[in-house]
Image (tube, rainbow, N blue to C red; front, top):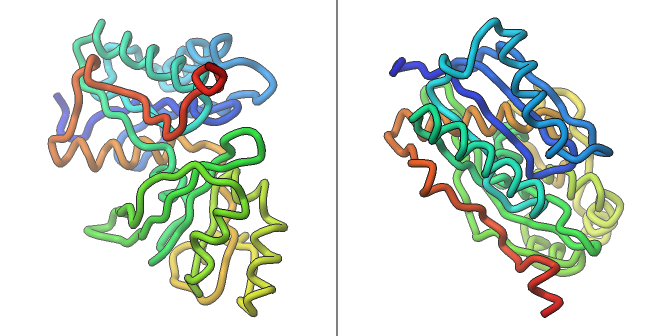
Length: 251
């Protein structure tokens, strides 16, 4: 296998999801899904389109990666089952990357980033990370465990931190509540719109936009795991759900 693997990365934990194909940090092709269309109808087509655009085939892929959750239950099942089938058929290694880790990675350098994703019913999946450059690569480290929270409990959990970068679609969804919480605590709040800002530390609370192609950040973290020998066999790949499904809650 190539020491610099060709990675096919899938992100199906969020609405629409995304696909990324590349080597190192070099993107060969990518696709962003349509939030209004089920990924069960588009994922294989998007994979084929990426391979065709790059003039490659599945046989060229060295490593399969996917977001392993938390996120949409249906989306995770679609992505993980697809990845397992491809990796098993081609006898290639695979890696599952926690979705919130990829979200934090997309927000750049930070001593404290809160990654948020919608969890349905007005709640969020949340986890805090630090992100720093080592040997030219952005490495994220979890500072607490992933949690399933209401917006009020989210603020309670992180209100004592004077410097925070908030990111992810869950942060965008609850922007007003986060901003009001900052104002109540006399903390400066600002939006991050310049990618250069993500390369520096900051004071106060910031809201960083999420990269629309989260699969790119799944691939970046998968490459780091690959270099550390932390690949998985297809049968070992499991979803991270954090909370029970609606069907389980209804029982």
